[in-house]
Length: 165
Image (cartoon, rainbow, N blue to C red):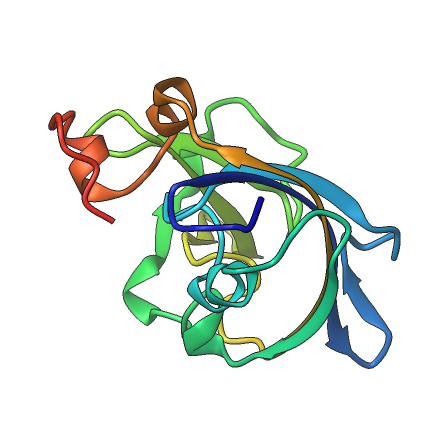
């Protein structure tokens, strides 16, 4: 079966960022499964997956626009240290999860610690980066309604009956 926009795909991948830096950081490929067109994976990767089949391998280069976007300065903000309650072991690079206004989980990273405040960043950790993505298709099947429940596209997030990809 070839990968199409309505497929559920499993790949193993390794992202190379240059200067020996990789994601995952240990340099070992990681497996991930997702519904195509669900907003989970970078658009450039989804485009490259279309038409591929199980066991097919590819390496692609993605610009920030094709991957996780440019860094949005509006997503970097300074908040009072008191927002973190009694947590005293805060460190740069720590990742926290909170909820959006719609109740969806969102993550942020501590970028800087100041005397009375903390600089946090809601950008994807790989935003603004060019990358080479080395991946192999491990499995492909048609996406089920359950697969699409985890979709993050706006049509699905609004719980409309139509998946509009």
